Length: 318
Image (tube, rainbow, N blue to C red):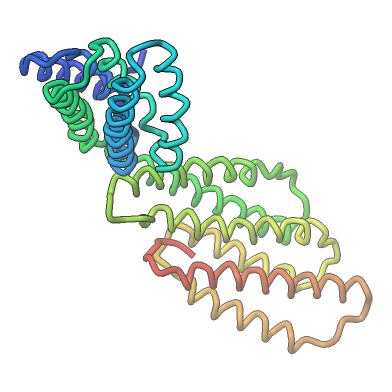
């Protein structure tokens, strides 16, 4: 059985909130623990948003319930009417996330059948202790750098394999590659970007961190590699240029984990393009179609490299 950090924070926070509320002699001190549990979140940004929404919901609930109960009395039908009014108000104010916590406070007032300054003060302290404890504990978040780096390594390993298999196909034809790396990358991108968003939300002033930008850049490159696959798999005609492009793919696959060499590979690609343009015209339809496909692949590789070259962050690999 694995106990996560969020579970620990929930347990410690709820107990601490109850202890503080009990120490202060507040009524319904157990509710401070409930408020803390409801405010524990996965990221710092979500924690602040949740605390604000739930605190505001409690305040709105106190005001509306105080008015309705004092006018119509403390009866189950009055409580029903209160809920009918409260939910649209919270939705209108865009703090519907504070509905459950507001009900906790409203039930206190309902059970006491009174609304007074001392009761309002008691409830305010419960809100401050419950939500405040959660906010303090949520300032401690796990470091996600190692996990993000692992996803980055997985992406680069799969890119290396895909480019290598493209080069092998151009050299030798179909060698039985099943393309499993293409399928794996879809999941890796989703998981990596989700984790990067969590990481960014733990840095309040940052909307997108370097890892998220990395995953976005690689995902764009991956779409290009996907588009190239059908064209590569249809190349049957043996022309010398296949070997030249195969060598280019092989060199590119080996450079995936080296320093940023996108501009160097763009220069090589341009030279390769000029060489192919200077060749004699194709002598057969098959050779023409093959050469046209090779030109298409070079154009796609140019887009692939430009995406990396244009990236504002320093990422190791083309």
